[in-house]
Image (cartoon, rainbow, N blue to C red; front, side):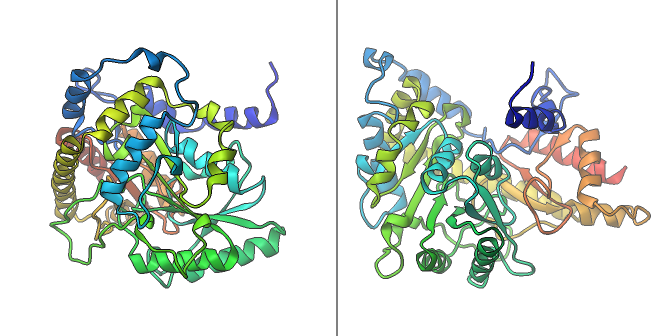
Length: 426
């Protein structure tokens, strides 16, 4: 049966995407020959604790079998999100329920804000390397144009790098005749695992004000920070965009923050995201109808409210999770150092090590003069049944760099590292 052109394009592309084969054949003690997946950003280290908490409190009231308060989340949920983020994000202006639209995950939240600010073909600035799923979130159904920003030898999180956003904006607008409507930021950064310094956030906001571009800060890893005990400083502390007084910097109507429970609570399956726009009520009004397609389930609405309202529990949970993140990062990077694998230092947030497997492969196989080192390494990794995010998936300017997730438990991480090294050595 003939499909639409857009559906056929995706059907063809999906057949060649190794990710779906990996997801169907995941390693476990019962499936020892499956893929060790350290590509998908999941944190399982606190699963037992969160599951115990949820199962002790799972008594769903009857109102949650109805449409409740509508597609953008119940009044209770919005109040719970506001109270929780007021406690941890330190916003200059305290969050109120009316500042929040809830979604069934942050990917739908990204779609919603892009839909709100950009028409098809208009640009969204995205610094390299980037979270690969930003590309379909922005362009797949909405037709937004991703405008990748290259930095060369500059640190993508530096003040000097801000000028590269302006170069990319001007080039795109001159080449296409279309406007750039927003700048999308992963803060903390995915895949680099670092936080933007406050002065860089301010400079980016000033740039957005100059060109009347929306500043969107995806802060899904905001509370997944940790103490880096192994790398030399500096380790930049996380500060939310909400904590910056925008007076004299940017029109607050242009500032928006995204957050969700997938990462900070290791609960990708709960499917809860939040769009926070404090000074632009039209955003929430415009999303009233589209929110029907991203309705937060009753179970998620209720459970998330219970969890986020319990400050004693969430304070303990976040502290324990951050401790485990620190330990697992130290364990993983020690292995990389011991085996001579270069990685990006200075991480203190999120779940990733950004490592140079291409360089290691070249050292071990100087006779192999392949041009696309990233593709060669990826082929070898898949042959050894281990999956990482490659340079091409992350839009890396440098070939051979890969993103490894270190938050699946020590047995899983050790097995992944062993297979990675085997893929390099063979």
